[in-house]
Image 1 (tube, rainbow, N blue to C red):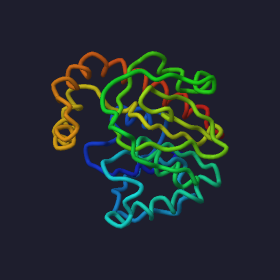
Image 2 (image 1 turned 90 degrees about the vertical axis):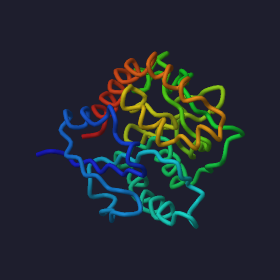
Image 3 (image 1 turned 180 degrees about the vertical axis):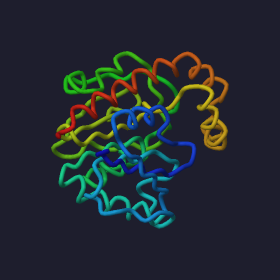
Image 4 (image 1 turned 120 degrees about the vertical axis):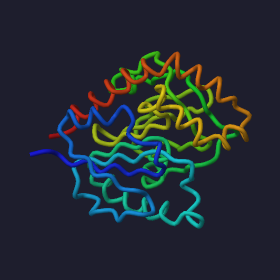
Amino acid sequence: MSKSALILRHLAFEDLGSFDPVLEKEGYRLIHAEAGIDSLPDPLAVDLVVVLGGPIGVNDPHAYPYMQAERDWLVPRLAARRPTLGICLGAQLMAAALGARVAPMPYKEIGFSALTLTDAGGNSPLSHLGDVPVLHWHGEAFDIPEGADTLAGTAACATQAFAMGPSILGLQFHPEAGELPAFERWLIGHSVELSGAGIDPANLRREAGMHGASLKRAGQSMLRAWLRDLPA
């Protein structure tokens, strides 16, 4: 019998990316839910939850009420240590649901750069990322929740990843995206943000050409290792 994976998406082009074929090959039946549109099931009913990124913020519940709804929905799942993976906004929602602060950074971190792994990170599935530059695209960051391990950081953001045991993993960066030509959708969709941050999309496109393929391989290996380490 296949396992179920709920994929919670906030923006059409910020999808599973390179993670999609890994989940399917590992035997997961994918259930897609659009934030703010689709009703969410019992938080304990599915085998795996993946909460994806997006340009809105955890601290915007007045403008986007489903931010609070998603956070509340995650609380019992995380308390039960049910397998949950968060990417960027998804990780921020998880951190907030675990009682940690999420706040704006002094400036946006957008582009490709390698992580610095902690000892815990080096002994985790993130070891597959090694020195591979990963995609960063965020203007807020989470504090590490109480009881969680810090796995990675960068010069711009010391809290790039956290884990609670083998089943809870929050990633501030994007290991699932960055390969051309699909990455062009990010450059088009986030054109206003890039302009406001003074970032030339041509530079990001060039970085994607240099690092996208290696990030795809490393990110898929990381996800595969994490999935296979989940409790039976």
